[in-house]
Length: 411
Image 1 (cartoon, helix red, strand yellow):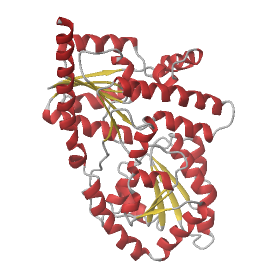
Image 2 (image 1 turned 180 degrees about the vertical axis):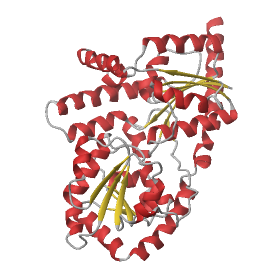
Image 3 (image 1 turned 45 degrees about the vertical axis):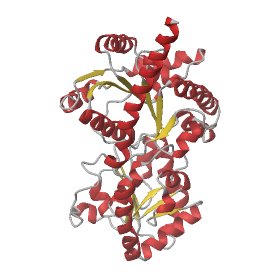
Image 4 (image 1 turned 90 degrees about the vertical axis):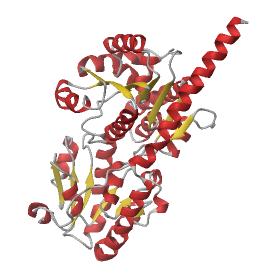
């Protein structure tokens, strides 16, 4: 089959959640079919990504998305009934290119990654459209609203409402929709009437030497770690919540414990955390695995989160105990993994961490079970396998529908 893959972010390098999933889907599809990729990328990303993606994609078109123009479109959308997310990711030039490619190439399937890209194929009836929502963006903005004050709370509620309607409309018109967790499916299709199926994430198992912790990292021990893109609001909120309400409780009995915030582009608010006792903000690092290797535990103290937090899976894949708030733990099937400790409150969180600190061997013993859990439950090969059948099913269904339509028209 020939497939058109549309993505709102170029899926390379696969160094953050949305890019990781798109990258593995793209690799999987291209191993079975001829795939053309159309995605947004700034000029710097294009130079890095295009040579790599061209090795397994038949065609790669990377479209620049100037932030100034995108922000103007988003602001202008406030005077319409359009979500500003869609306005931000709309490019008249890309729309023209996509329509021309569909007409020229006669694709068998269009694979849309993220609902913001669905408007590019709105009204398309000649080709089956599969949409991977990944997460419910509407639910994310609703969470933002609950943790914001006016006027941002109003703005975010508006976006949540408009995106919710958009997501339902996209799901109604698509041949098939995918989501990363049962929670996302429930958010997109609460009445269970739309063609939304579960396609779980995976995680690449690290091939690292457990003894190869650099001396400068080992010197920071003992520490717990948070890994993530540090200009992303849910991550910012998580580390601030940890430093404000959890770490001080742990420091009462373990004042030498450090909290490492590992990830690129730390916001000003995150950089200020480095002034607090025991907090280390690294910024961008070549590899996050050495920081996980040297940690006592990883923490996932999310109050705002949607979908699967890959940072949890990556830590578990290293055999590292993880302490998490309930929602992200539920998204990865936390009840099945005895290395994932779920904390309802700051007090619960600190007590669980203290237990792991005071009995590190227990934490590591429990952590060793996490590796098997991740191998069993979050293999990319295993979790992407149903996608091939669903593609074939969508194509057959579309052909049957077209045949019935022609037959009815001839009568």
